[in-house]
Length: 326
Image 1 (tube, rainbow, N blue to C red):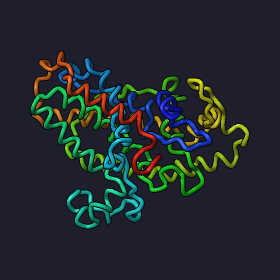
Image 2 (cartoon, one colour; image 1 turned 60 degrees about the vertical axis):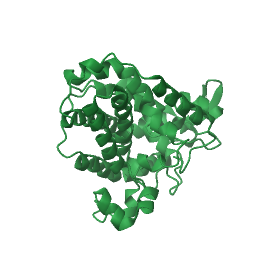
Image 3 (tube, rainbow, N blue to C red; image 1 turned 90 degrees about the vertical axis):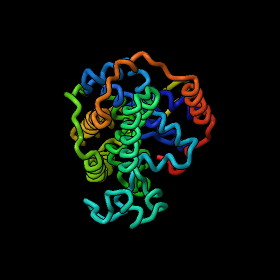
Image 4 (tube, one colour; image 1 turned 90 degrees about the horizontal axis):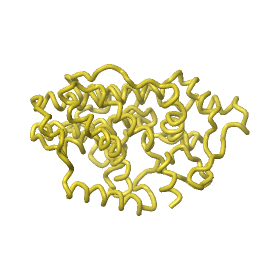
């Protein structure tokens, strides 16, 4: 019960004495990223997306909820690309079939498959646009946004994904949840131009993964360096949330860390927003730019609503995440 209370307010920032699992970009940032992506779309798509921005925002976290219900969900959120050698990891084929042939399905799944799964989701969204299927357009749009944003998180491209190998456990949620929650509303700008058509979506998402992999060492190093110089009694603070006292990185430490990173978290959020809008736009163009005005007033079916209710029940009733925790 404590975990669920914390999730509602962004549990990734919490460092309780017991272990609390984290979420990719957190229950705060994922909805924000999907929300702002809508405003990068052309008017022909905005007619559908803006009216359903509430759905796209709320369901941005559905893939994280499924990590508590479905075994195969976890690997879709990350890739431990450092296990494949050294940057830019030429030994790892970028095409799925070639990678399976070389490393085997089990090995690839164990190490994460996010860049390939983003491309699967693009195919699903494109098909939904061709069919002018309102429900599938909405669900696939919300969920591809989640996976694209995850690909932009540096520690989602590192086997040391939560600092577990460097005595920095908790850094995952610190970078992607605590810092955004403190600074996004006050200081960051997410209105960033327009979506672009992606001629090679596969190459695009792989480039983002490689950027994340390059940044992972910096994320870990700077936290360690700051911890060595920051007053130990000021690194953490205690806050009450919904009647629960949590121990988390202090505001002062978080702000200092963000300054050391020179705005990296904001940049990756901005890049996520642009990438998501561009994938949505690319799927629509590849589907022949169907007229979406007729879908603008459609509603989800009773079956869709039951599906979401069942997911929430499984998530709320689960004791822990299936597979690796972050």
